[in-house]
Amino acid sequence: MPAISFQDVAKTYTGARGTFKALDGVSFDIAQGEFFGLLGPNGAGKTTLISILAGLVRATAGRVTVMGHEVVADFAAARRALGIVPQELVFDPFFSVRETLRIQSGYFGVRHNDDWIDELLTELGLADKAGANMRQLSGGMKRRVLVAQALVHRPPVIVLDEPTAGVDVELRQTLWAFIARLNRDGHTVLLTTHYLEEAEALCHRIGMLKQGKLVALDRTAALLAGTTSTMLRFKTDQALPPAIAAQARVTGRIVQLKARDAEAVERALATVREAGVHIEDLEIGRADLEDVFLEIMQGGRSLEVSA
Image (cartoon, one colour):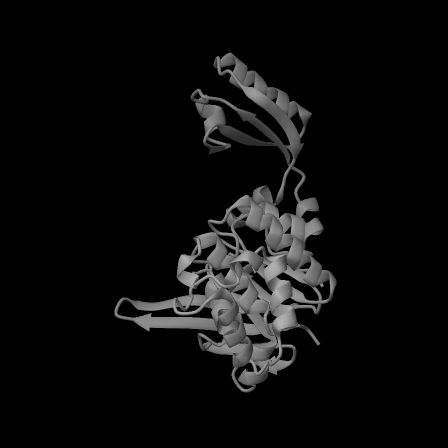
């Protein structure tokens, strides 16, 4: 039995401007104990899919189950099996951190939960904030509380929807260390993130959505192995020659170029030198998940499916 199963899930919205298909027949399973990454550009359908999983949105067609429980027909059991960390900072301003977690426990009928709440507070760096009112916390601390709320009833399946968006490095490290431990203990984790280095480091398998369709599904290692590209990376403050600029990915001062072999690397460097461009911190390495993601989103690779 999979921890999560999406079977031919579709979602269509109809409004004054016509019909919009947010999801178009998405099907895949996530195994129990798996750390799964769901990636895609903004508007790809990730949040819609998670909202259907959480019971916040009703699918137009298809079937979704959590630990064998259908999210509509058996909604109570499906909700108990899920812990979801949303993108938005949602909190009740009238309670302290500990009160918030006790109330959340009560929603799931969990009593005498203070030992686990204490462990969550410690693991997420919230122990010294237990008595603080939620309004007094910084954005990063509020996000830590959201994570604790999602875990307070010890769900077997954890869904993290952009959990580290806009948070500091310390929280990211603390969160991932704790979530990785829970995953080792048998919890299933579904992660959406725009930090692709996180997905590459943490996820056993990756699924990618584009315009509501599943366009890639495979083990992380297999996705990376599927690209033969060498990446040439360097920094510069100068304008690139047109022949290089047309094929480069530029982020601030960082320039990344795809090169199939050593000869392609030499040609690119020669073109840059002939243009009088001064470069710094030259590196040659393999493509990473961000390179693979862009290649797939731009249509350079077709759907890959692995069990």
